[in-house]
Each structure stands twice: as structure tokens, then as C-alpha cells.
Image (cartoon, rainbow, N blue to C red; front, side):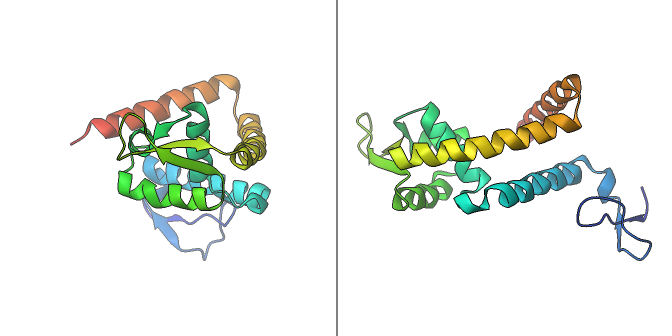
Length: 163
């Protein structure tokens, strides 16, 4: 675990004068972060024209799956603080993608639904995400993909259980 050389921009081996990463390549968290960054770069290249981040895609997909969900429940779904999610919902509403209305059960909360342009943009982005999923699937055997997802879920549960 010592002095490993860095990896190039595309993740391949870098030349001998590349800065060393030390133990980082052997850390699972570092590998997860690198894979996430590669995923985000890939989406930016393929869907940058849609001006929708992976986080915004996830939020729109969750609103589509839970029409009328309030911001507090949506924040909890993603493990976010409500104050973090509020500006994101304001931005999506300002773009005309999400409609916010007072929650009938709790007049202090905002209930969220997708607008027709929000549904259209979500469908376009979902096609890009599904293309990325096919690219990921091409790099893994089906059993490897299932094991990877199971391992990631165990990691999440283990870290969430830590104090």
C-alpha cells in the first residue's frame, strides 16, 4: 500500500513521473468516489445539454414515483437535511419542472409534483442514465453487477449504523 503512482485522467496507469497517491487506491471509499466521479463525467458528456445533474435526476425520479411527496419526506429519502433540499426544489420549480403546493396534511410543508416539462425532461434524462447503465453492465457480468449492488448496499447500511 505504499507510494502507488497516480492514475491518468481516464483512470489508466499514469507515467512514472505522475504524483503518487500513497494508499488511496487501496481504500474502498476512494475507489467509490473515483467511480462516482467517472459516472458524473460520463453523464455530463452525454447529457450536458439537458442541464440536469445526477442529483436533480434522482429528485425528479423520486417525485415522479411519489406524486405529492412533501419536501421533508423527500429530504429524508435521500438522507439530506430539509434546508439542503429546499433551494434545490426552488431551482427546479423556477425552471418549471416541479410544482410546489401546500401539503393538504401539513399546511407548513410543500407537496411536490412534476410538471409536464418536468416529466419530459426526466424521460430524456432517464434514457441517458439507462444508456450509462448499459455501459456499466457491459463492463460487468450479470452476477458481478448483482454482487456489486449488494456489496454497496451493505456498505451503506454499515456506515449508516456507525455512530
